[in-house]
Length: 372
Image (cartoon, rainbow, N blue to C red):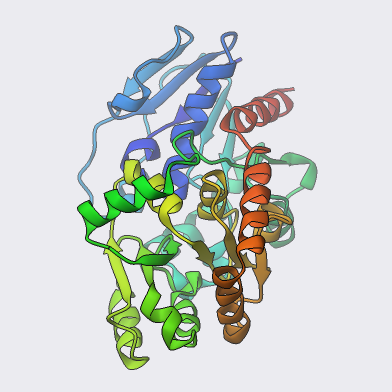
């Protein structure tokens, strides 16, 4: 097979689910496949510079747009008539029309249709205006969970047999480390000296950070004195709402917003925390719980959309609308060392069932099915 892949998100959107997915998919295909030929369209990227001889790079320059979605919307120029299949991983945005080959997109979720108020106006406009035409031009869809497959098929009446599920995985950097050493690094580098409860992810309203802050505020006074709530994520438009909510609830001195944390430091936070809490209202997959589990971190997550599929029986699953239940289960994990140990073991076992090489194998099978 001769496969083209739009790899721009691997650099331009690194640190997000789509950016991580694109980066790790290319790396995984490089690990498992020496037979098929790949043409990758992407900027120069040091972390993907050891590709095999069957991988060729067509360098793409940035157009310096303010928005990733505006930048990625500009299609790559494909003049290579030898490509048999072209894959666009970022929900199909920026798919090239000027090529006579079969096309597949990775559609991670349909959040703009389910929760339009939680995405940017620019992305919502692009998604709504372009996705129907994109799907009409595709022979197949790759997605990341059975939940998303069913959601997509129902919404777009797309044949289920042409939707391929390729679950994601935690990157290799996510693994158990010395808790004591990780806490020391965080104290020295980020000046967080106390034990803490952790949230990792975006600042979109669908992530339910307001609910998390309220659940934290309901913890006993002694618990809040001992355990900070650390919220990791690039501060977006919703940040002021979260900050104001923590002030209104009287916990602003105990809630720490770190802003963006470099990728190499993320395993340190996962290993140092007492529990990761991920109370999202909607996820197509949800990488942070899996990253935490790969570090042996106890996880509390929502019992809706794809999260039960990802976490299975390794996490405590709660209704994200039930603030009292969320608060109760945070306290429960903090108080019960036996429960915590059980969750650590289950987390490591569950996360070991996912790998990016498996994702690549499943993707390669999807390519073969689409072409055949």
